[in-house]
Length: 73
Image (tube, rainbow, N blue to C red; front, side, top):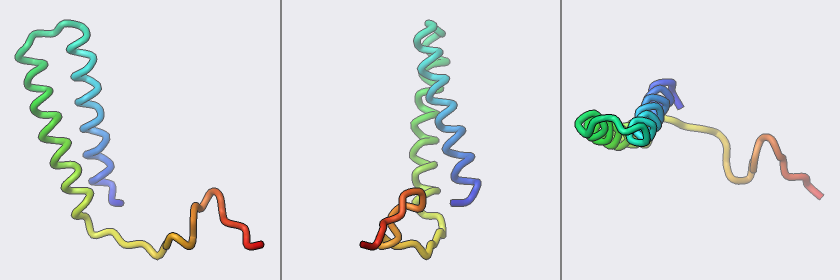
């Protein structure tokens, strides 16, 4: 995955966590509403960018997990 997708994901996460904090602290409605709308639109855009990214791998399900290899018995 390219760094663009990861940067968008980090930004989306930050905005939505900020939304939760602002709503818990009782910020004004327009600020919370703007963050909610912006966060949801950014989430949809982030998912679209990540899923349409030209990413290929040579790994298959036979490779299992890199940190826990399957032992041939």
